[in-house]
Image (tube, helix red, strand yellow):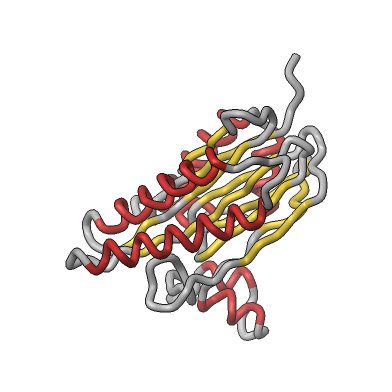
Length: 228
């Protein structure tokens, strides 16, 4: 997980999370490759003239290709999820994800939007076979329908918000975090505390609720604010 501020455009930032899978070190290497490619492409990005959605798509596709090339030269089968949001200087926001890492956007404690997982249980929810609560405890909750590094091209879901407001919060997190919270709980914590304190509380509560189990736990939380 990384939050990059643009080297030349004030008010432009990219937050990206990659949750790696496959082998003892394959997953970590896959996630590191995503972050490296994201940094390189973002540093070349010109907010005033380049397409934000195309930048995000390029990050996904180039990361997917690099992970697949790595798999050819190793005995591992590295894969990774990806979730990212890009905020432009005019407060336009672009979101992309592949897999089951999520992006949430909150206004106060209210959730404005979130991404929907590329997973078997999400497909079951959409088909009306189970509800959201049942999905969280489903034995196949970890099965993805797409991610980076798989044989098939990754699913790419993009979203756009024309203008964020001051005070809005954006959260990108792995399934090791969101699995233990409702959207209402996340919004309440994000709204009540400063981002650093909210992040610490979310991590602490997720670990407590996992009771020694759980998956990799990563998050980045950004709140739009004015400088005093």
